[in-house]
Amino acid sequence: MVIGLTGGIASGKSTVSSLLKKLGAYIIDVDEIGRDVVEKGEKAYNEIVDYFGKDILLPDGQINRKALGHIVFSDRDKLNKLNSITHPHIIDRVKDIISECKSKGIEIMVVDAAILIEMGLHSICDIVWLVKVDKNIQLHRLMERDHYSYEEANNRIMAQYSDEKKAQFADVIIDNKGTFEELEEEVKKQWTKIVSECQKGRNC
Ligand SMILES: CC(C)(COP(=O)(O)OP(=O)(O)OC[C@H]1O[C@@H](n2cnc3c(N)ncnc32)[C@H](O)[C@@H]1O)[C@@H](O)C(=O)NCCC(=O)NCCS
Ligand SMILES: Nc1ncnc2c1ncn2[C@@H]1O[C@H](COP(=O)(O)OP(=O)(O)OP(=O)(O)O)[C@@H](O)[C@H]1O
Image (tube, rainbow, N blue to C red; front, side):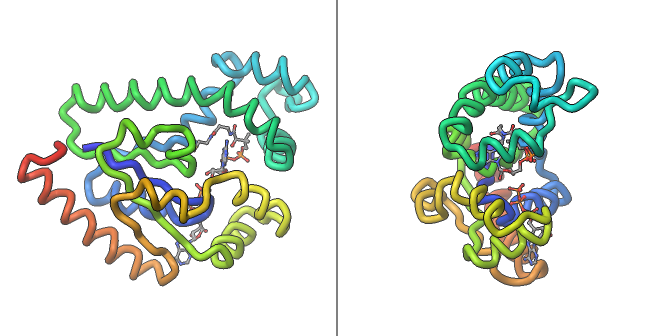
């Protein structure tokens, strides 16, 4: 069973995936893979430097993610370019990890990605969970967590599909407007359903 876990930036996906990890799921963190594929020496690195120039490099030659983020989240064409360079490598790696997990007999995998649907990764998942959150709460949590200005936070939110659009692809919707305890209770409830489906032999 491959669960696609999506939701806008700062909706609470990492919080949900830590709970799922404790419950026994194997977590595939797509942000982490995205960081790996742009490391110096990795496949996407040269293409990014060729297109964006050496100004986006740190003194040690690594990509300055803060600077690159600043550029792409305020210019849609440049974000599309960065996506066209990085996404094929990220998708390949996610598929490889899923195959490896399956060959090791791991039963429940979670693909945690804010832009799971935008990347088309939902098509390789058996079920999609959406963590949704009211935009004002999202803005507040994002500005607090990453110390972004209102404009920076809003640009990042606007670079992703809305919850309404994501909901069209979701099998399960978790509303994260409440407390951590309420979120944990909902995650456990959904987990119990998945485990019972697996025991009945569906999707697993
Ligand atoms: C633009 C970059 C350099 C900014 O790096 P930074 O360290 O500041 O952010 P980080 O990678 O930790 O991402 C933070 C959040 O931004 C959002 N985000 C990241 N990339 C994108 C994108 N291409 N489109 C929309 N939102 C995105 C996600 O919600 C993510 O959780 C980096 O995000 C990047 O290389 N993105 C392209 C690869 C990608 O799509 N990764 C995300 C897969 S889910
Ligand atoms: N129910 C909640 N109540 C209060 N704060 C919360 C709740 N859920 C998550 N948060 C906080 O909101 C912030 C965003 O949550 P989290 O990091 O899990 O989001 P995310 O969807 O993984 O973000 P990203 O897309 O950037 O990876 C964090 O600071 C987290 O502690």
